[in-house]
Structures are given as C-alpha cells and as structure tokens.
Image (cartoon, rainbow, N blue to C red; front, side):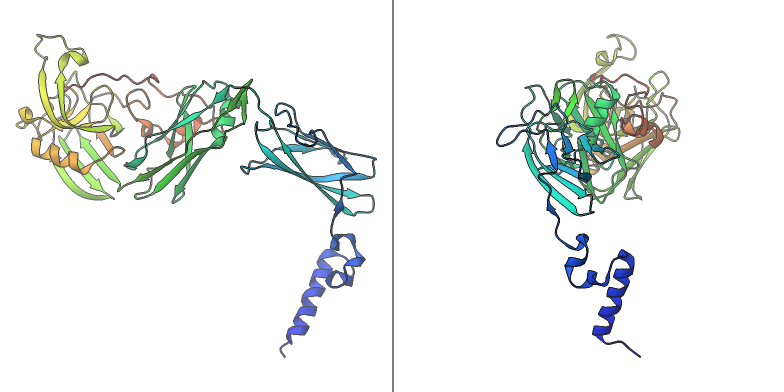
Length: 419
C-alpha cells in the first residue's frame, strides 16, 4: 500500500534522528540540542594578533588565533582573501591555538572565519576582516606568451619572470600561482627552462579548436626573501586544426595531415651528409614570404664550394638557427630522390607556396629518417615535444626537481638562415 505524503515525511525524519543520534525534537523544536540552534558569537572566547580598526597587518608575520579563558576550543579556521586564495594553517591538538603556515599576501583583504565549541558542546562563530599592508617595492611580474592569437596545436605556452627564482621551494610558489585554464580541459605541466623562463605544454598536443587562458595568482604572494609577486596581465589563446607534417629524409617526401587525415604529399630534399637535417619534432616559429639566405650566416666561408647567396621564397621557419621548409627551385631534380640541402627542407616553388598557405605558427613539422642529431628541447626553437611526458614533469617544481635537465643550452641561438 502506498504511503501518503505526510507519512513519508515522518519516515524521513525518523532516519535523520537515527543518523544524528539526537532526540525526536531534531525535526521540530530547536530547543532540544545546541546543534539545532544558531551558533553564538565567540568574540569573547578568541583573540587575534591582527590589528584592530583601519590598521594594516604585517604580511611578513603569521596570523595567530588563540582561545581565552580556557572554556572553549577552536574547531576550525578558514582564512580566504578577496581573490579566493586560501591561507594554510595548523591547529593545535587541544584546540587552543591556530596559526598560519603559509605567508600572507601583501595588500590583500582577508576574511577569517573561526569556529569554536564550549565545554557544553555549544558551537560558536567569529568572523574577522583584516587587510595586510605593503611589503616593500620589489615585485615579481610575469609576462605570458606567445602573443594573443590563434596557433597550431603544438604551440607551448611561456611565462617570463621579471627576476630570477632559483630554489625549488620558491619555484613551487610561483608555479602554483600560474593558472592555465583550457577548454576542453587537458592534463599539462610547467617546465623550468631556467630561473626566469617556464614553458607549459599538455601531455599530448592541444585539442583542435580549443582555447586556453593564462593568468597569475601571484600578486602580493611572498616568493623568496623580500620578493613578492606583482600584478600580471592575463592572456587568452586559440588553437586551430591539428596540422602535422612528417618529413621522411630517407624516403625524400613530406606527408601533411589535417586532424589525422592526409591532405598533401610532397617530394622534398633534406640535408646532405655533413649538413644533415635534425630529427625530431619541431614547432613552426613563423613564416616569411621572402628571405635572403647567405652561407656566411651558418659558418660557411665565402669562396668555398659550399658557399651561397640566394633569394628564397615561401620560407616556413622551424629553428632559430636557420632551418626552414622553403622553395628550392634549384634542387627540383633531386626532390623525391636525394638529399642535397644544407639542412633545410627544400620543395618546388608551387609546393612550398601550398605548404606556406596551409600552416601557421604552432603547427608541427617532424623529421624522421635523417642521420642528423635530434632536435634539442629549448635552445633552438620549440623542441619541447622531444621530451617524454615523464621527463617533462621532472622540470616542474611541483612534480619533479624544478630544474632543466634536458640536453642543449637554454639560450636560443638566433642565427641567420641556411638553405
């Protein structure tokens, strides 16, 4: 037989009473147990070391809350600033003292909520508003990159600091404050390239047609010594289709895929012995419809049999040291059958133009089958994807050592191009 609505309400109340272990008045009159009543004002039972009135607290001193009179104990403390950042703290076993365990932010407005319990088990509440003062003029600012726009799915994100941060603990403070929000969400991590530069990438390439927002939550946060975070402008980026070009040096061809589907196949020539093209994954750095390429810029002496001075069209750059995918009409006879370049990927003018129009910054060019060295991660463009996910996470101060242990120097070699 079905129950009436009134009967169902009574049964639900019975379950609640059993779960709480209190009298039947839990569903009715609130006078039977202190938990059913409103918490009392615990102002007379706790003391703060924060200044009263309009005075500002010193952000370099921990916040401390203690009980007064010994009749109550602290059960919980929540301290949050106006940006939603929580202040970590520790409560003594006897509930007599709570103190912050992480530095307070400078120039921040905090709301501190304290819960207490007296000897009769009655709950108390006290809310405190406090503001911290300035902590000197030394500020750490963050500049995000690349510039606002739409990129290929291989584009790493960058964060450049205005001052060096060297020890792991301080790097962890910075890294924890750098926010990356992507739609759809991805698994990603920061990597400390050096003391002032970080790169961020997902475990795999960014999803096609996704968006990402970078921001810093570092303003006012103590980093190290007298250095605190400063304000930083956020950055929003978009990603296009997944464009991947695979250059097979051994087979002298390039295959271009869009979102996993082959859309182009070109005969190419790559670096000849002694000038072998680097193997590995490279990210397109930019496009130039015309470049003057001279052999002296890559260390080839003028007058030697390898010297050159050529106008080059439809050049897509993949390294700072001068490796491009570009038009090479002088080597059309070798494209598809032999490697004759000084390290670049050469194509016919028509094919180079088509490739140039297909790709954008951040798209992927991967070279396989070459006798050249492997692309290094950071010193010659964006070689970030040549590190495994496990190795990448080791460069995070939150997940690993927080130091760059990858091969290659960290300062990019911005040399002129070679053909």
